[in-house]
Length: 181
Image 1 (spheres, rainbow, N blue to C red):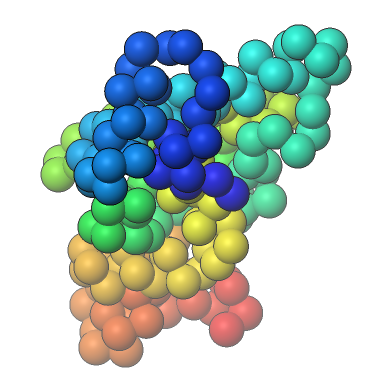
Image 2: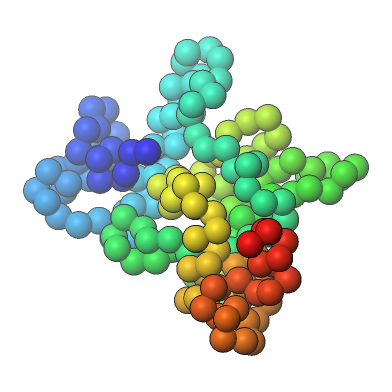
């Protein structure tokens, strides 16, 4: 998975924002979280454009979030600036619903949840935070546990964690049983 920094350093196009980010990256300057998000949008756009130019969707472009646990899950992972990014992933599984099979991703910033991407049934994820979501896919249980440890709410169901063992695990007792742990 390419990081925003790697993408910026290797950028070869003529989009003014990305040209400026390339110069910034090559000078060794850091990107703000907003710059990283903007670069991730450019990455997603380039991936989508590449698939369109080729004529058929490239199954390797984008992430497949449908492999995650059905329902809503909450995750915390280190981002490219060394801070934490908190996300909510809604993997919809409602038979008979027009939303069945869709996945929605929201970034949690304080009390707000801002939608940053989606995945339609049979397609790949389109949106920002690709690097963060790649880390979630690498170890979903660890990123849910990190959320619970940081926030004090279960990374699976978002209920408040009230006992020491659950706070240590970051996942409540009922959700822990559901994972077969």
